Length: 87
Image (cartoon, rainbow, N blue to C red; front, side, top):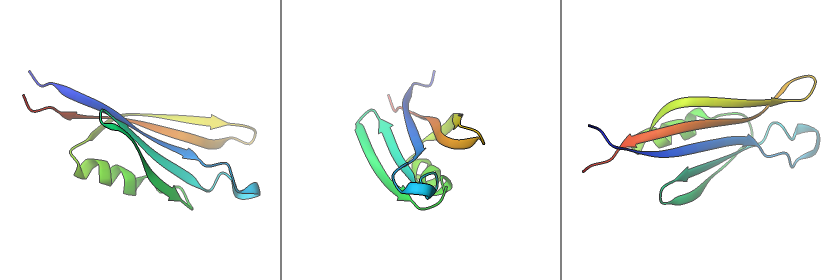
């Protein structure tokens, strides 16, 4: 039986730069070893961060998006990740 360790990648609008506040995105990686801030992107570009997690053996198995306001704007995306643990 495979044992897993779990993590999550939170990719959310930084909300700090005035009228374009939904265009800056912070990536934060939460894992068993702690929390790592993976930087801020000027545009939505989560693929770079997902590839980084994949290179470390993490597999994304779920994604949850938070949409707010009228008109709807994407505010955050959370990826659930897992990787097998060596016995």
